[in-house]
Image 1 (cartoon, rainbow, N blue to C red):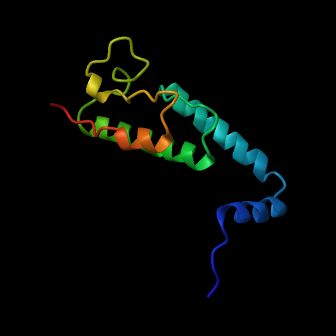
Image 2 (cartoon, rainbow, N blue to C red):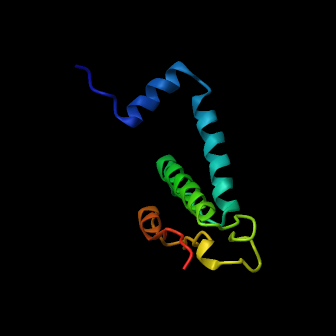
Length: 112
């Protein structure tokens, strides 16, 4: 039985096979960070690729819950001047807040 390589080792191997892999990963990271910032999620730049992916997944999960409970992402977003229902607005992440702390504090949006 063979063991799976550790993520860093795996990436090293993949980069040797595909010289453009690092640039592609950086392009995807930049795109995901842009999506998070558009949703109002503060990014420090110290987040790992895994942190960025977890934040995007959490934001998308939150948005699906908002829609499932009748929220409108257009009017209930962090960018809206006056959201219809603040419970449907993705909470802000503070600069000092770790990714695990932010993820743990995300509420499950439900109409009261």
